[in-house]
Amino acid sequence: MNTAVQPSPTLGILGGMGPVVSAEFVKTIYEYNPKAKEQDAPQVILFSLPSAPDRNESIYTKNEERFLVFMETQLRRLDPLCDRILIGCCTAHYSLPGITAEAKKKVLPIMTIIDRELERSNEPALLIATLGTYDKRLFQEGCKNAHRIVEPDRTDRDVIMALIFDVLKKGRDPRIALPTLERLLDKYGTRTFISGCTEFHLLAKALDARESSSIRAIDAFSIVARDFYEIVRSGT
Image (cartoon, rainbow, N blue to C red):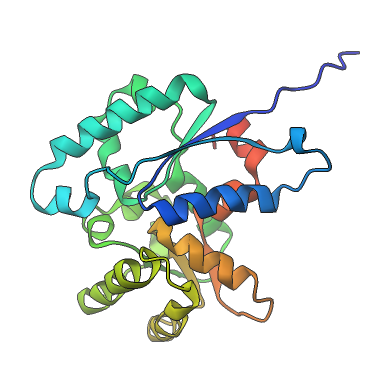
C-alpha cells in the first residue's frame, strides 16, 4: 500500500488589484482551513502589485496593450512558483484571450467556478461588477448558466462603481455598502448576488459572519478558500 503523503499544492495569487481585498483573501484561506499544525496550513504566494494599470481605464481609453503586457509578464513570473494561479481581479480576466497559452495555463477559471454555483442556485443572481466587466460581458459569455444572471441598469451600475471605489477600495467597513446592496436586490427581485468585482469578497465575508442574513453571495474568492485543496489540485 502506498502511504506517501500527497504534497500540499501551492496557490499563486496575482493580486494588488486592489491590495486590501488581496490581503483579506489570504486571511480567508487560513480562516477557512484551520490546521492543528502550522506546517499543514495551505501554501500561498501573493504577488500584491497595486502598480498594475487600471483595468477599466485600459478598456475605456483603448489602451489595453499596456495591461496585456503587464498580465503576461506577471503570470510568467508567478508560474514556476506555484501549481495554480488566481487572478485577484474579475475585470482583469478580459485580458486572457490576448495572453499566450503558456503564460495562462495555470490560471483558475473563475467563471467556471461561479457557473457551478449558478447551476445549483434556485433563484437568479444580480451581477455586482465594474463597468468594464459588464461591457466586456465576462460572466454572460463565460457562464453556461448566464440566463440566471441579472444585470443592473446603467444608473445602478454607477451606484455599484461608487461602492467599489468610495467604500471597498478605500478600506472602509464593507457593511457600509449593505443598505445599497439590499435596495438593489429588492429592486431586481432576488436575494443572491455574484461578486463580479473581487472587492465584494469583503462584503461577502461580512455577510457570512451574520448568521441571520438572508442574502447569499456567490463569491469566487470564498469558494476557492473553502475548497482550497480540491480546486488548487484539480484546477477547477
